[in-house]
Image (spheres, rainbow, N blue to C red):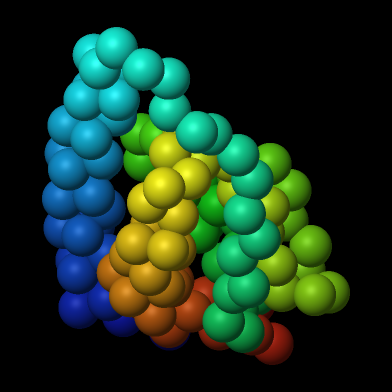
Length: 112
């Protein structure tokens, strides 16, 4: 079932994340010392495999982060972050701003 409010909210949050992450990524690029990049594991809420793919796409399209692997059985993603110093805030933002609406749009056990 289509949930227009979740879709609109997710779209607006994605745009905001892209703008803010783009600014943060620009700052990292322009500073004179290298960032500490690396990998983090992100445990995801229950959602369909399509939902996991959509969440991965949103994370990857946001500057400074890329999903490297999705493990649907463990409900986990391996995410490369340009700045590990902000890993906790990045993961919290994904969980707060993307995950609930993606899970609502693509529930576990729903159509794939």
